[in-house]
Length: 275
Image: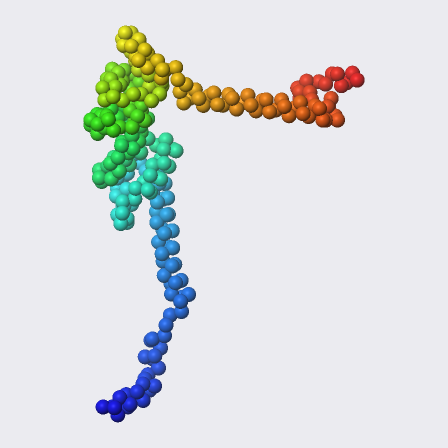
């Protein structure tokens, strides 16, 4: 048996060269390059597909079949539903004010069982109103959102109140506001109170208007966000003017050629000419 093993070992160097060549290891740099190129190529194609889909959505004919078909073809290549890419596409459509297309994309997304969140419905309702479909926005609010007013963000509630206000649905505005009050929810800004106040006045409900202003007088007298922005802007303007005046005074004290530079550009330096 030992002799047989020795004869086998002596036979190993005489193996064919071709068999040895097949076992040559691949250099490490060649291995990584051969694998990273396809991966990077896939990422580039993926990004390009996202970008081209946004462009296609902008350029499609106004047809539900075309939009749905394009989106179906898009997600057919994805392992996971591309919510992030859809968000980018919706942002691009919003910049172009393509409200009807936004409605189509969101409805397609919801039909796939995706994006079923309050924020999605808020975006849908907003796009519907801008697409002159306020009544449809109201129906979606009633069907999907209004049954749980306790948990709906005030931002969404304010949006619906504003939609009712802009589209002269004042009875609905008052009804929604009273439902929110019945849930124990206090309006966060006086902008809401102003809309309800106007609705009461236009509906001839003067007693309700008076009671509303009395109930929320502290909030009503509190500066709103827009008022604070205007106030801070005005304050910054005054500070800039004060800084400019201070720098002028400093320059007047230190400048050697004062009479040449301290006059307004549209006035003649008469005193300097006289001297």
